[in-house]
Image (cartoon, rainbow, N blue to C red):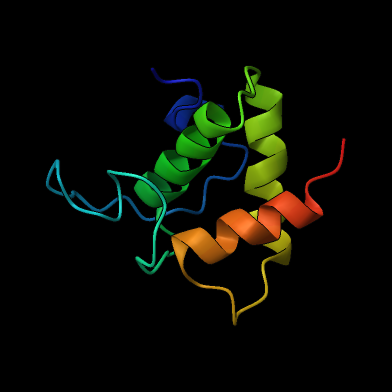
Length: 93
């Protein structure tokens, strides 16, 4: 199920690398895989995966996640699972 896609992204300064279907950067569940916040496919994957896990249904929630990651994510937080925990603590409605 896709809740958030490329067309939902607020920012346009992403790189768009082609990944294989099973690449852990864009498949599976968030884990210790490094995350590149300037990579559009990784951003869409992580936001979509977290929206599904946390049962969020609206694209504007994905935009809040994107803006937090894009603008405020500390450099020392760089794995998918660490970003998941950071977002859980910093995402306010």
